[in-house]
Image (cartoon, rainbow, N blue to C red; front, side, top):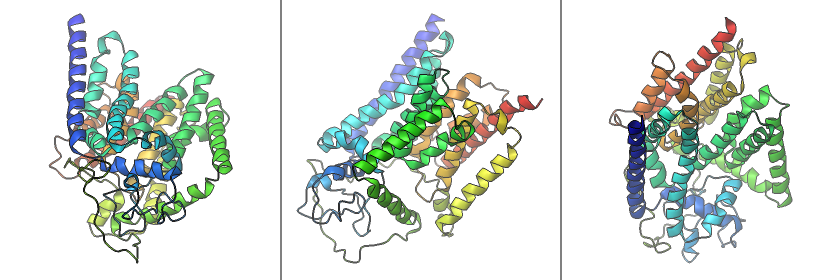
Length: 425
């Protein structure tokens, strides 16, 4: 047994080192085009108002020659009314300490932080596996979630979803705890996630609806009310209102009907920004947008965003009808998975880009499914098939990541049905 333990431990750290070195080499060559707009958005939160700042808006600011390079997003479409930044005011606040640094150091620090954040739940998971799986289980997690083009795209672009996943993992872990103090902090963290990206409220919604009077709900409510009062006290509520208005504009981006600036005059951008000449460069890693709006638009069907909200409502209604006799038997684990299903369906239906670097969210149900998987479970087969498709080995086929996630979503529904069926016997 010791031989196999050492074997898997060696495999784990070798795989981790190879992936990190790959991402470090990519970081040295490319500028993290998605990280850049998040850092500039954070800098705009507290910066002096440039002349074109438009009353201090993070989302409407358009850089002009002569203004600080620290506020330039080189990949911005300067003909559009809005800039590339789509984060919430709270996300800007989270990234502000990092944004105070020169962008060169931000890029490298964020690479290390991404690995730290993804390894936190993996190591926690490994500590709770039996000795026979102590290193095999986390190595498997590395294979499916870190050794893939999905993860390398996440790190190359400098995306921030891994931060939300780490926070959601903390919220799930504590919500499943039997200790009141941990449950409270689980609810508290769930509310923080909503400030980071409002759609994450769906992860906690089933738990809040089923257990409105609970320690978890108390933590959620306290954090939400405290945050609301703080934003009100510092005068940031109008900023939140503007954020939601800006998102109404972004829903048209995928179908090419974004509002443009009538007064736009093209100008030359500097080749070197903050001492870096690679801020517009992106490595050609396979990118797949699985947003329903985008997929239908590729087929020539440009439909109003309300159509996709209707699809979400119908899908949720159908699921509630199918599980209507089992809802009373949902425990905390089932409610968390139900929240993940809601979030997953919403992410497909929202009229915004849904690129494959978001796959890192599947690390959450992976930790629930791994200890219970066996070859005879009807939910295990589509889940594993979806994981394999998201390795990227069949990326030459169209929409393999999309198909893989649909299979995994069906696996979660099968798991809930089979697990709850025992209550009906």
